[in-house]
Image (tube, rainbow, N blue to C red; front, side, top):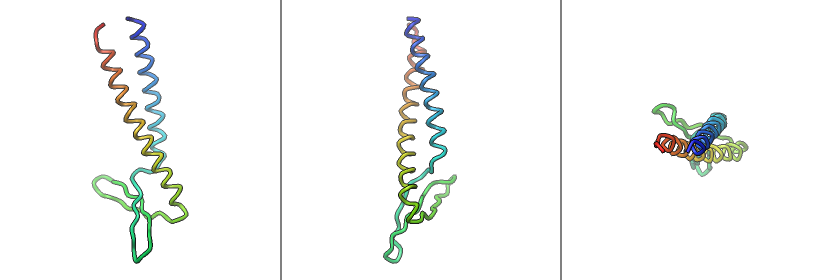
Length: 100
């Protein structure tokens, strides 16, 4: 039983390291989503995100759109991974609390 507990503790440490690494990556990427607006027949792209209770829209020039859009997609993937890691951590912590 001690072996299992040791393996779970090692896994918990590994998950915590991964969580910190992914959170550091996420901070460097833009948050929010890309919204396109049609103004006078032309299409314009905006980065929308929340700042407290306000919704902020920032214009994205056409030449920067592909780069920012790919960064937003990467951020969404990282956020999903972070969510999964947090669930794993909860599961492992519960398993460690069970008396064997």
